[in-house]
Length: 618
Ligand code: G6P
Image (cartoon, rainbow, N blue to C red; front, side, top):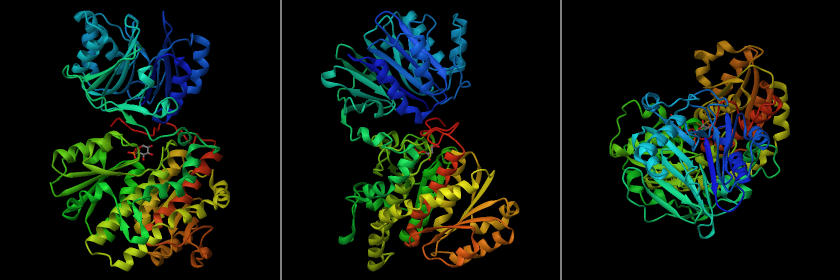
């Protein structure tokens, strides 16, 4: 994983790099480093910890002058997070310096060869091996940096986005990509170049960006030149594919909220509206989605849909299983990207694979997409980040348009993914004749009410905070739900464990009898989603079973419920809606509950330990 960012141009590079690294911290925050070239010397500073720690250290130990430089924020893969393993890494001569996002799988073999040639290594990283390999090739071949990088990468197995600088060629940066993302922001008339793992570090400077493709490398020069060519041969990429970015600065700042996660929870009414804007024409009874409309036959003829995803996106996939089977009557299988890719799955040309990913960069989901494509399946992407690797790899897709999600714990991505998937299921159900016109119309009219209902729920914040204060110190939590709300139980438990470090498990309510009930006593808080639709009566029986064992019951109920009110210790009411849309509402209080508990436990909500937002390693 990791985030990298660099600058070459006429401005001071240091503040641009530091601010950029702060925006990329969602990609990892085990350690951080920066390197600058001041016209004479390479000045490098790095440290275990966050970018704020780096800032303090760098300003004391190095000159922060220079119009060229780069930085790195790390999520450790090879080697523990400490000073020596932090990036940037220098070559043996100290003339070359590199930052790297990815994994060099054959680093050990390459390292042994370099050791035989007299290289010594200071870190446990694969990256230090790569920079020395580049140096060795540069010496042996007597070539320039660009050529040495190209030849080195031809020997490398793995994934990378790299930025390399050579003191002997101090007017240029070399960038290369395979598997890990990298974007180049282009200043007016090529007067400056910004390089970063995503476009957020340079959004206030330029809207023009190039996303390098796999197996491409670029050389950007201070004298306004940019050249892109292939790594495996010397062919030049003629069309630079400059895109205009849609992102703006306000979207990536906290806007008065204490944490990004809280801001993103509160953005959900707008985010859901943005997801269906222009797609859902409720009064006309129309759903328009380019990627689906253009490929409608593939979906209608599909023998089944396979959904691949990881983490929260996988939970959205589980909700989609209910939606597609219930509304469109298409069989669905939901797979973890990581399991799917390695278990020799049976995939045919009649299958439609839907890949769900907020970042569009999750390595396991991306690999699953490639595998499904190679077997002839039609692959559809549901991504949030425009231009991301998965979005580019799939045959067609739909963006969620949720806006940047920066808090590591996913919130608005989940509800907007469900919105897109609901639109798809409804469109297919209608065309296939599985839902009658009035029912279809009821769905559409209800869907446009959802943002208002989410907004109403957000007003319950103070009540939820009070519940959080009662349970903030417990060691365990259980979450139960049935039908459409079983995935919500899983998602509620995931939210709590990832940001508050309280152990939590999600279960289908009826499965409680087959194990988890043994855990229930007066100390165990159990969150039960018991909305009036679906399997209400059965869930009420489950609630009674919990109460007979003296469990502490927090129930998510439909407004006006009187049955569960009498049984539960606490209730959180959600507005009435159609069963299929209940996850869009029941999720919200669970997000707020986790948020408040984590804040009260003084956890770092936006950057939980050991996690990263975008998991670009398998
Ligand atoms: C990481 C994040 C999760 C996210 C998962 C899948 O684990 O911390 O919040 O759900 O990756 O990410 P994706 O970008 O593919 O949705």
